[in-house]
Length: 253
Image (cartoon, helix red, strand yellow):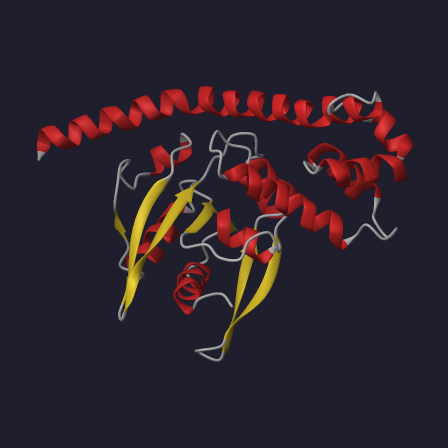
């Protein structure tokens, strides 16, 4: 069950007409790839027309910024995450992280067009809350980070998708997605055997390694290392900017 505290935040944001997509661990829970997540991660639209509604929603939630950068549109637009603490009477505060741009993922309007909207039940309040969730393919792309902890989750996300539709009802788009994203060698081998023509057309080195009878685990490790290096390079200037903001904050204390 999704905790009432999280649904309260999501409902408030929706009430204020803020275009926001659930991502991170909570989205992984809904896609069947996780059992629990403590924080709430959202991709939000932070254009000048949309930003006032976002400010109003966070004000209604009594959210406070808990780290750098400050809650300013410029930082969201540059790719930073802004971190909030949202109080809740009788419960520990909820951490909410907002982002507007993500590495390796399309711009927000495209993400919004592909979203999945779910009705989640709040058993305590006896109500339903409509929640816009980042599409699976976009969530997988967003999980390709330099953090070791994201990769097992990424694997489970794609595994869950494959296991739910591997009975011959899969679409061509699903097969293409699995060939590009599966990280379980057994599932990947099964898919390649079932769809040899699609596998032959794949440019993914991992798939080509499997077709040539090479070490698939090694190919997966090489792929992961390259993506993690790309993510570190992407975040390097943003981390320098954060450190400069921290130094500035310490000087003004």
